[in-house]
Image (tube, rainbow, N blue to C red):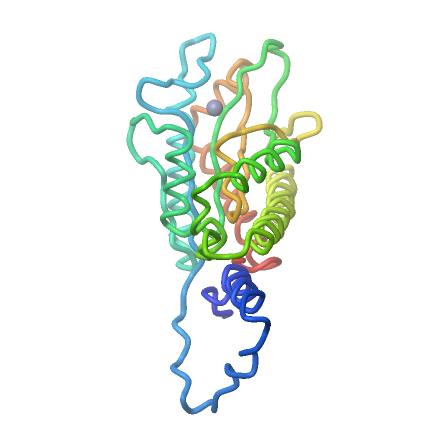
Length: 269
Ligand SMILES: [Zn+2]
């Protein structure tokens, strides 16, 4: 079992330190093995974000089914699936019918030091014939725009794995932020691909199921994130399926397998 605590964030933090210190202390870490304390075994944290809630119903089907209810039920199934594996700390951004602003969802994921973030939604499209699951990651343009906004912000502290960028020379801060952002983008795309592979075996996929868009909820610069549209509430067949517990469990099992495959291949970051 790898030590999940010794990941990408620690490497980035180390890079920041060495960049500032000019690598002068690189050899100081060579200590006798006997003096080291045993590593604490940590498990990765998965944050599951059921979309909408409270005053925000999300999409509404022709028969009055609310997206916020369908996604909460499926996200809760996913949380149970993952918790049963005893290999993850699993957190839901909301477990009741409450309204949460988008930025608050990202902020909570960062507070919980998430290693992976999955936002769960259901679509409604103008064409009622269209159906199928799709997965979104943050578009490159949106990602670069977010990074630029962060870079000019005065309060950049703790955005890159606990590195207080306000204390780093500006160039070092920008390089680290860019490095982290790009690595996160790549991992997010790999996560979305896993979801498509695992669920493509069991449910209908939308045409070109892996997409990118400007979703505010996917903008954490240091957490691999994807937004899953479970299906189309506007399609009568899928409207029925999305309400069925057996279908919600099928979706949850597929998503759990995708999470497992992601960590097995890429670690916890
Ligand atoms: Zn939605």
